[in-house]
Picture 1 (cartoon, each protein chain N blue to C red):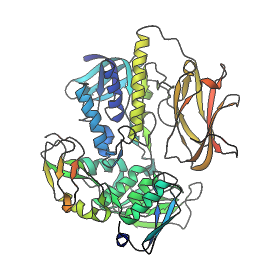
Picture 2 (cartoon, helix red, strand yellow):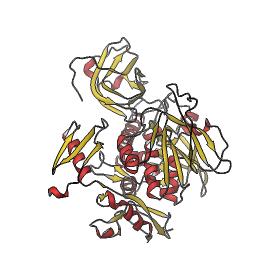
Picture 3 (cartoon, each protein chain N blue to C red):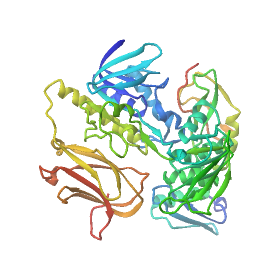
Picture 4 (cartoon, rainbow over the protein chains, first blue to last red):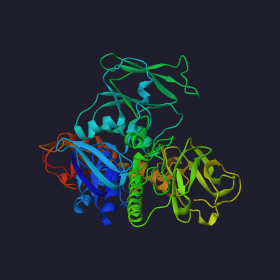
Length: 432
Length: 127
């Protein structure tokens, strides 16, 4: 078996992996990107619409333009990558096993690993729908790849289940390619993607958005012939008598994304209930020297935010190697971050007590939309250590807060911090 | 802008500047635009533009001959008037380009006679 040694191995050559690798390489360390596709770029390559880059480059770019800039920089820096190479395992002592059709099984020994494998699409929406398993059922991202990269149309007339951003963007894309999108069906009473996409992808083309409905039956045996949609009550139970039939030959599912956890879990890293691996404020997983960033950690709204997070992971991996191979690392005491009222999840999951004097970036999402709210951090004795007003919160927009808690005199025995999003009491607090 | 260039009638426009999503009512009252329902300056500007001359950046793909992939993603280098989008798409659908392609290459010049080019969104090597 061929064996390689590097300082940092990056698993995944998409937007996250590229940004992390660039940071590491610029610091003078050896880095290697391992990518399963036959080119670098990842999912951003198939997101051919614009709206990327406003944070990172202060200009509006398409997905391919955005990631091409990173590919070009990686090329300029001579960052090595193994394409068409699938990682099948990594171990807590940071040995990666991968396969490709040129070398067979290979082994890569690294001092630190950065996980940047992205996420995959939820298919759960399909599994619960009664009917046969005809051709013509795709996830929205899969259809996006067919239409934008491979040059195939998955069908002619569509119903899209779920109002995630990819689903809405595909509705417009397919309309532009001459297809008919009959409806976007959303089980929640509100759209799950961004308002911008609702207006510019659906309303601009008079594509009906049907909320509080879901697909309850798929018709057709060899090929989809249509779907039955039904209204649901607050518990998402089907309301009898509300069924409507919509004729279509294709059903697209845009029902959410989940971090790709398989490798991470098998390596023994703890996975948080709401998605990706558990990480501390350095984005280090529960396996020492293994960091996570991008959509494998949490699903981001914007690739720009993925890039920012990946750079942090890269810098922290560099720091780790310097410490580990300079002096011995002491076991760090950690504070747990807990999701409280109307908080779906919060990252980091853990904070090193020794890092409390530094700036810490918190990212989290709410469970349901709300207005005029208060974001509050409490210690385990219910003492409020931070609060901030906000005009609105919605699940589709990740909230990012950069906080320095050093002034808050957090109790040295504090075990946990709880983040909650609560109705705003009528007192004056600084607005962000 | 001449008064006569402002479209007649009224429209309710959902503002997309921020997630608040104000419903902005805009009305042409004998050449003067009355705008209501917005809660910020940017919203007012957005509604005005959407009412007078809505434009969009067009992003689609062009077929490629002898490329590493069969399609190259493209975009318009400037926003296109909304009513010209369909015609532009039809023009693009008839086009076939040869690889190799570099990001930023102009693949269709002055499409439909407008001062707008269709440019490549990425590099694409030969097969």
